[in-house]
Image (cartoon, rainbow, N blue to C red):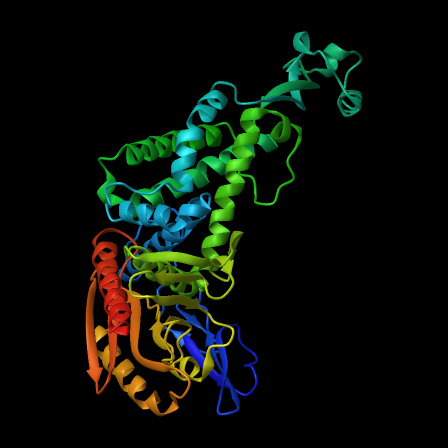
Length: 477
């Protein structure tokens, strides 16, 4: 949900500023409002949003199924973004490695490595080890014990015995010949076992969620591994429940066993990683429109990098965050990438959230753009506005393209220091990838619906590739 403000910043609501510029001596900004956790929210008033499903529950109603589909889409977009972290390990081939990862994502039968997949591989032997030696302690408790089995008595037991009628211990024991004594019983309800129980239940839910999101991967080795891990965790959780082990709450302080015992320490670490995953999803659900923008920017960079004559001459330092902040996993300077086309002698800049967008982008409300220029000529630089509207349901591409073309046409009188005639809309496909365009006079707007995986990614990325090629080589004519 987007909002526009002029003059001062809006007050009394939560938002993020996507774009801030000056139009006719007036500060104009574009604000992003987060998605609510429920179907209704206020400041500003919002209603009718899909509700994020609760972990571990079956999707029964239509609203729950819609929320589950939205969550799956969000996680797939997140997976494409997180592949950038691995690609950054080789700075000389960052975009090549990322392109290969995205190419693999087009095959839904080969699901990407996820946190629960990694744990299914690493934690299975750890759980087998702990199943054989679930830690127990001997705890003292007072029970009525036969006289011939009494081994220990504490002060409370002796006080109880002194109050019983009789002249000696045998008479005080009564007809049952039992007295209150201290006995030691095995007890499994320790902090480390509570953490193990909490982890087993959380891992079961996470594995089930992953399997629901990858139904076409049933024949893959990763799917089989995750399914086996889910069954092992479910069995372990039932065993611990039968032993009377409670569930540890989040935020516990680890004891000696959790810090020193290798297997319990690995369980504690994996539990914290899964808990962090839930926290991350809470933030990403609210700000997933920001994650979608980063996804669209990466798609444009990959499309340019595929050109045979494209040479990356400058790249902004990309700082990867330990966890998402406002839906964003990485920070970068502006522009994020600059390419030189050797044969056509063109410079192409990919600008994401520019600090000084200029009047044209501010009026267009586009916080992503391409800037195409010829260093050997004095022509005005040419910009292409890129809009990245995120929606929980597929939007009408034809209507969006026509509205964008009309806006670009109205903006032409403002084009004094640069040219902006074309625009691109990149929006979630929601299972129906496609592309369309609309022209009005000399301006053209193209709308593309693409997805983060499978056919939606393959078809949508092809449309982005075609658009980038047409824009760059049109500029070279």
